[in-house]
Image 1 (cartoon, rainbow, N blue to C red):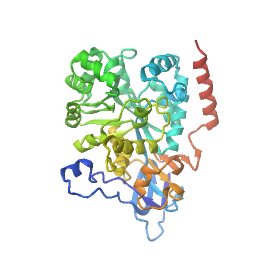
Image 2: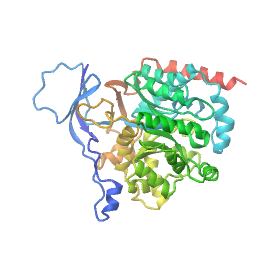
Image 3: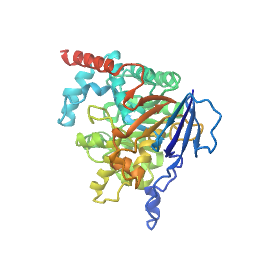
Image 4: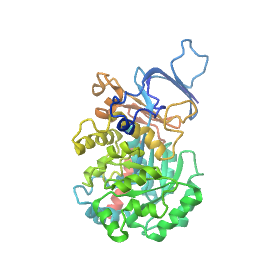
Length: 446
């Protein structure tokens, strides 16, 4: 399959070495970072790999294209990477809102999750994937249960998913996590797996030590929810005389890196550990706002050189799987937190949503538009009122962009969403019907 996208504006994001917040702190007299380079040209794809990206050839090429797409001056760029989510929680969207976190979890979420079946998780995940595609998201980092059903939903849809271990005291064993690690990393080209556990406060020391041992055995990173609420941090301090970050580090959990989802309530020591151990911080601004968890200090993290990415969290706590909203909140909340309109430059946030997410998830072959990289990309409509005038395309994406600008989403060289139509192997109405059926069964059960 040979595909050519021409007459495009192209943002490769291949040079992620643009001046960062840490660079600017080191040189306070330096100018703000320039917008990333966007140039006119074309992109060529052979099967699932980008074979060329650059200026359009002056002479027509003698190549038989299976499809040629006239981008009409619109923007081609890497897809967004949703670096933390619980996709199948679509069935809980807007059924238990405006509640305190613990009441929401204990009375609304956990009892209904106990009734989930693999088939229900499959259809709930397919619904989430559809929403990801409309938001220009080409891969997700999914931490949930019944991973075989999640993987099947992604494979059947043609979508890229990195599964994250979610073991805790209520389910799973270290041996099962190891089996999953080996199984899913050899299952399919669209599926990979990272070691992980739910959180320090839900996981016993014995299990945590077992996960740390796996990290050393496979020289692999480990990912977990971390310091999402003040209560979580206070209880860990009382229990172990350490913050969650320091406690996990004392177990040698992050000797091969890893990541923390949320990281809202962090001490200076915590941040130093993240910097030293190259722990990715995956911020989830919409979920943290809706659940009143707080605002993660990502500007300070960026100034320290801590690696950053963005996730939506699940559709029960967000409730929208929309990277445009996450990007706006990622920069906007920092400005409010610091009373500084210059905080968290939009271009840095855009990089977090694309390059940072890919690298946090281990998808280094999907982080940019370059020859030899995977063809995971999006086409964004600039011929919409919210994108005009084109003073700064990259900042328009963060400050005024929305799902209405997503014309096409391609994963692994296959167009899965184009001009409002899905190409995922199933009629959307069937997905909606199946989701409604399984949701009704769960809510009706006593």
